[in-house]
Image (tube, rainbow, N blue to C red; front, side, top):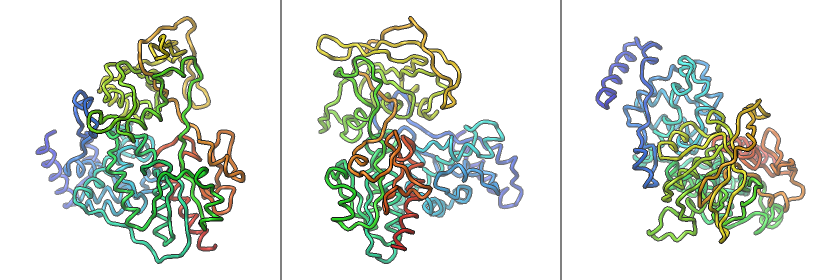
Length: 493
């Protein structure tokens, strides 16, 4: 459908709406609007964003697909409870600023969430339109519409700074500047409290900056959100490792903080405990992506001098979004061949369908029902190959996915010079080791109640350090819960 055809269809629908004759059947007949994107071959050579965003006509047409259900089942799937149908109807009517105002009641990061959140298993999964067609891909594209209004506001320079209440003289420390920390900082600051964010890295943004590649989430978007916090009066201190620079107890006793929020994420990479993981050329996905994203390894020849392998043949182990990010980053860093090795089938992959699709378009080769048995090195201790074993699927395991069962004697080698382990992350033990009264589970996650309160008075926690490796929006959801609890706690303190 051309833009001219889209405009004609939109005019017809708006005329019916004005006349009061627009019916659900008319909405069902609107074709889902595909997201414009860079060509798969072209984008292998750049780190620009893959999806280029809806036009205004596309956004309004997609919004017209929404049935405006009275029960709004989509809201139940949103971890932060955005009034979805209300912001969508504003888009349909061309009131983009009003749509953004509705989103910002519950989410400070619409440009981020619209890009990286798994809407297909959250707000879009219960969408009535998707259920009508028995296909979640036919659901209203809530995430893309959220992204659209955020980008529209940025293009019009119409972003506003949230109002801050009168100063309360209460001090709150936020440990970590990732999505959860940003939300807590904003909500607590809006209540008038003195807020300081402590970040271990030299740049703010957490996983949104070091973990998610530029081609999925441009860093300027995260920078804008941090600048909004600073305009609100939030103080940000980088290169500050709580647990080393100072402990949580010192923040209370020496610096006079009244409450602390822990949002340090889950940044401890897991390995496979197979032979050869010590070889030169083996990376954890965390290290590889941090070098590429935070340290701008993709800018070779343009001022960046990041130590990272100049790989020709890369194997990535894993099937989640981090594995996709690693494989797609390797492509952009010039690898001639990139394999993604996953021990289950594509159906069981935890990665977003969109990310899998984009990886395939960019030439990543999927080796499914296979898993590394050992990594082989040359005489100089560098990676030369991976020995893999083939698998078949057995009965479902505790995750509900069919268990991979090795096929004995099916070993084979893949010639590679780099291997990236992307099988998940655990929790950094530093906070627990330096905060003895903090109750944690056997995996190192902080234990909290329904208000995100920890076992220590005045200390709250959320995001991956509580949930394990989760998503941006889930961290934000816990951040909102924790912020409300902190504000309530400080009112009575």
